[in-house]
Image 1 (cartoon, rainbow, N blue to C red):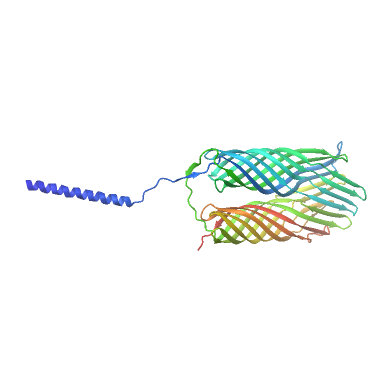
Image 2: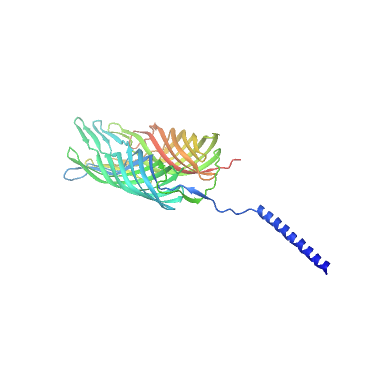
Length: 472
């Protein structure tokens, strides 16, 4: 019996030891199994900040201007449509308050400058001459507010509204009729109105951001009395497109918030890429037309405008830790939506109507060189050669309707931009290009003018998404 009890005790001890060993092995194996870590949180800068910045873009003046006798009667002159387009600069300051994880509100003030100069010169029958400078934006300011939604912690989509005051350079005209000279110099006028618009802002760092913005400025109805006894009436609006950079000061509104940590990306700047984008073009053409013995016409700065898209392909190579060079080819396609301009001289019973100048399509080949301000962000300069086909214009003069032939204009292109990777293979870029095209003098269709020539400058803004092909 005693021996039997001892055997039981020994068996129990062996079994206990086996369980302990098994538990130890199981624990060791469990230690080697992957453990699901809690989600990582990263500090995300709060949008509650003051900021200052500057921008570059287009100004389009459109509306109606007419000249009528004092006391009423038929209009002596009437112009309806786009009345100038050119580059403009802006400086701005403001503040934002992040009122919720996804919502930002704020206030701003900005100042715009432009140097639009739309000049027209017409000579009739070698004797009568009319030279005119049309209304254009000189400078102005806007104060207002904006409210936006954070599509991501670093991308703000917003709408804006405000009050604007713009100084408009008014009509300046000189007419000569075989001897006497009549001068109509309208004093600059200050117009006030409302501004509405929308934009997107992307924060590169907690203190530096980039934005693109469109604004419509309604300037209302203005009337001035000319010393010669005629009444000038203008009803203008401004379309303003800007890209800009802002410096944002500190975290005045509170601490940074937390959000899921963004994945670490490893962009490869060396390789082939393809991309597509959208934006606009502003044209400042120089146009001359002649009908010997009857009419000579010259216009400079009368801007056309269009909405366009871009398709691009290129190759970049990172030649140093901070430097990237590359070559590219691109195609621009655009439309002006059938916009027209109409000028009527009631006293002469004459109406001149024409489509607005615009780009139909263009190609550019060139290169770029850039500096990496961070591993994901490139700022660059570009240069190239462009062939641009202008949309044919249909116009009516003295009751004769005609259509100009399409021609391709050639010239040099220069520009600058920035590009930012969002993943290992996808980036976004914003770009400005200026193309100066050579003058062509083979634009007549033989129906009205015996000679027509045109040239000028095309200003292009584009925002694009780019896919970088995997490197072999």
